[in-house]
Image (cartoon, rainbow, N blue to C red):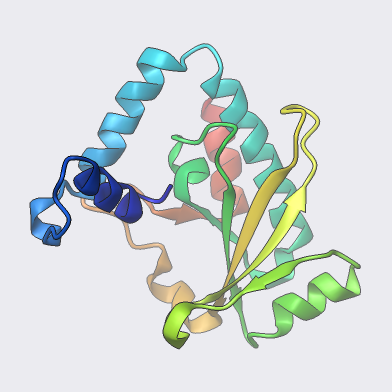
Length: 175
């Protein structure tokens, strides 16, 4: 689950049905807690699962190279498990460019339009992953090429929120 919906669900579970965002922990605090949980309960499985998901991401980034893919989310940040989806952002000159590329390569996909017309639309594909023994969901957020300029801005700790294939390979080489 993404952090925003997870925080709201947690607030409801403790009986707080209307919570202001300022009353909730920030995403970096949540991420720190996720990392602590993974270290405590998943240390024997999570690193291999993360590596497998990053290989799936790298494969799709190579396949979609003309669309300037950038990995984001839990797979990029290192908090993914086998239950996580791969999130790629595609920076396209034309919004239909991504669909045309998938159609040309005979890759089946589903389209999820943003609610209310805000934000990117998302193409979802399923990718087999022999290492995990199950398919992996890959979400492709289609963004405007001009959005790439601000996309590499770091978070409050100076860490990038996304990275291209070269950056992903640097992460993999450190692991």
